Length: 316
Ligand SMILES: C[S@@+](CC[C@H](N)C(=O)[O-])C[C@H]1O[C@@H](n2cnc3c(N)ncnc32)[C@H](O)[C@@H]1O
Ligand SMILES: [Zn+2]
Image 1 (spheres, helix red, strand yellow):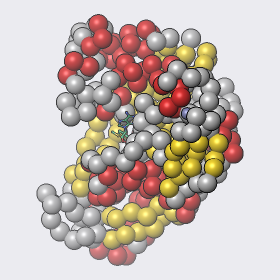
Image 2 (cartoon, helix red, strand yellow):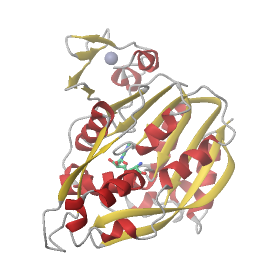
Image 3 (cartoon, helix red, strand yellow):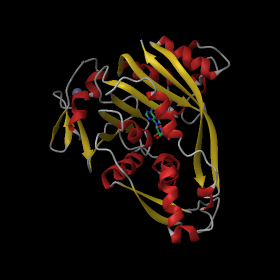
Image 4 (tube, protein in one colour):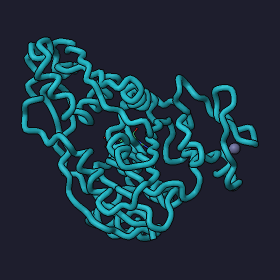
């Protein structure tokens, strides 16, 4: 683990037991606290939540995330690679997709942000916001409950290389297996990726100057708890970016917790207003908001363009 990350850490189990500020130290390839709570470090990745099955552990799905996150960097390599060009369904790389949602998100977040800063990318997937934040941050921690996504993000970081299948097909669009290409990547040195979710975050109160949560809140079971976590991990003046297409799904979030439906006693109707109300309840002021275009890959002949609501909040 990079040294800059260590002062941010605190035992998440002791924190839920009401014991504040219990430090974590590395012993025998695991993180331990003084009350003997232990967290494994697997191939350099600290595990603060258990491996779960699900869509995010599917390698084709994760490959689609790599394409969505790094498409602007992958496109020139596809154009140069003769084998990739031979794949008749890599044409979508030449479509006028909006290529930089992640860069746009980070630019909106950092518009007036004091530097240098510590940043958390919560629900980071394969890490594009983390590495974009790292250009201006002192330290960035990217956190996701999905082991496969964190392994993929970490591999990109450590190998300084994006390894991706292009032209890969899914059962719904049968065809070739695609071509694996390798894209050199100028990886930053101040990023750490670890496995955790909003209930098992191993950080001390007020640890972060900046938190980025891109398209995560509508994947959580309890959005108000998620916002409370953002409040716990920030301090007065911290900036928090929350983006979401408000794509609520009952498999992730019980209907009673869908913002916009009157959840937690917030306004019924516009979920954007309900989000601002809930953020205000937990000490955040909306600084600016924007709709951002986000193009995600589904398979070689299908991508989805979203209009994602993005709000930047200041912790009061
Ligand atoms: C729709 S994806 C967005 C990923 C990435 N931030 C992006 O913008 O491409 C949602 C991500 O949130 C993660 N996630 C789901 N529930 C979470 C939770 N309770 N805490 C933190 N992350 C969570 C998922 O594993 C997934 O990587
Ligand atoms: Zn502990």
